[in-house]
Image (cartoon, rainbow, N blue to C red):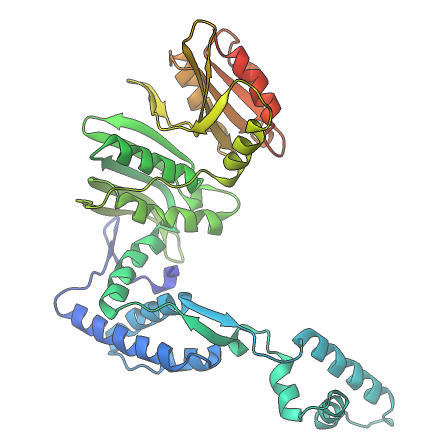
Length: 404
């Protein structure tokens, strides 16, 4: 992923616009990409410092330095580095420093410690050369690591990846992101909503005349975990490619002054069917533990969107089903909200209070400081507040209370 300093953007009034590659600059970008790719391939088995030097040495026109450095950054992200073979650097440094301390203590007043003597003594003890000691002392630093594997791609693909990566880097500075999406099928809708949840983004979804509006909190609206959250937010762009149409508007803070600007993007015409992501690890673990309880309830991944027109919607993670004495199937949905925001919890509470008909249980971390009693016991929805990890037994007990 690109860093913000590698984004080629310009301010136009209160709007931030990317400097796109046109018919004149794109061929230069492809040529640069081809030369950078050749440099990476030629440096497999060599150190990261050598690779960085080779990438920086690739010739570029004065206006293309940022483009070159951006392409190089994306290529380095596809490189796998490992420490060179040899002694453990920490053990080696400990031996050298211990030997240096011993020799220093034996010096006369005013005597100077000879570095070469120290290294020669350690080399003799280890039965190796001074050069090997020199190379091994800091072999665990990134610059000394060796390029062991490279995940290649074509120059045209690299340039296309760079164009998307610029937009992703802008989102690292977002306060709020609003996306209007149009989806071609119910499956694509579920895939979009499930992926937003899978990325653990704080978002609110409402229906519009021709699709849905998704409002997502940006990393600059948070007080902690800004970098990690920003990286997850950047992954929204590939998710949107599964939508028929989409328009994105982000409120960003740009530059050293963190000037408030608006960033806009749009796209669409997805050709491939969107694939729904797997359930989060904690939800899969819950399903496995729940199955071992031996209750009449059966848990499975949910594929239903629960919506109250004019109020809002939710996409639960699981659905629990059991056959009643009358032969009818009872269903209770579970949405795991975990460490989401308190605002998101209150939106779910309002959805139930406004008349959501389906029985639904919202699992909320105790860190959000929300009481289970905010929802009346006669309503078809309830909160399950848990500490640490969810309890399958506690959920099973609540399921029976949520069915007629």
